[in-house]
Length: 164
Length: 212
Image 1: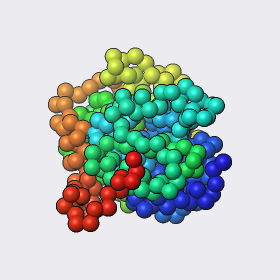
Image 2: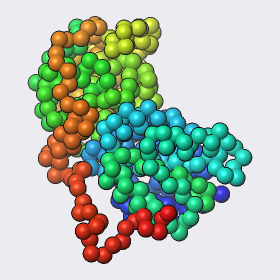
Image 3: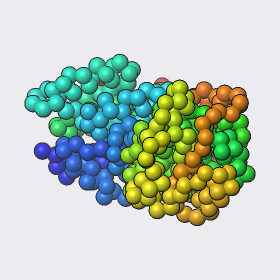
Image 4: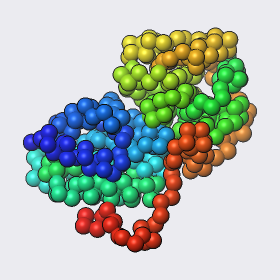
């Protein structure tokens, strides 16, 4: 189960990488992280109703000089695919996609989401890593931000329970 | 009132404001009427209002004008709720409503029946929400919205029909960079700057080295 301590570690990694603008749609496994983000005064935090909306809000954040991330479940990632394609990829917007990996190895729910998530990321040519080690979390977030900004493209981190 | 007449009526009111225009006729018409690097086109139907919200949250001291459409707003109605929640005081959300998907052949949208977008915006928490249908009333509503804190929603009822203007002159990448440089020049921020390549640095601490 996600803990408040893990949420603080995650937020620490985001801040260390310079992320200061986050939008989110809930998943039960992201609960602690979203609570901590909502309470954090250094991060501009926007809960949105639908994930594609979040791609738009992140784009506005980036075009006004912020490092932006969207936090969502992989079902929501699928929901955001048109925005990712015709805004983030077509304009070259470096959004950090933090995607909770439902249907991951060993998860008995959302098996179909688990099956298609990585192939869809590959089809969109979005670079990604799966986060499984809490000890390298901050390093992976820094790496993702570096690659996103160098390539002017969204980059994804698939977030598993092991780091929440 | 056609869309171009409405836009003509407000061109003198707009100076350094960011203007985000929805996928459709509004983009080329606004650029022809008011050419500026502060104009940002949108290619995802519906995301105009969300990108505008992001700009307003990211640069809270700057007025942001969103030129949305009725089909686009219907596709992203949740953005009204998010705007009502966040209350960005400098966001001016305009919906140019011709009751149809003009760029997709003219089939009717939800506003051709009973939808009232101004009432919807108000119910979503955007208290300053008005309906206008003449160039004079539209200009007065925009003038008010640019002077008084919002968020504001202006439901502008127009007739269908595109003006005979050239296409928007920039592709997505050139538009993005021009817009970002405009933001840099008028705010002092740095956006899309090139860092020193890591290969030039003496101490190599690349973020991904142990991350495989």
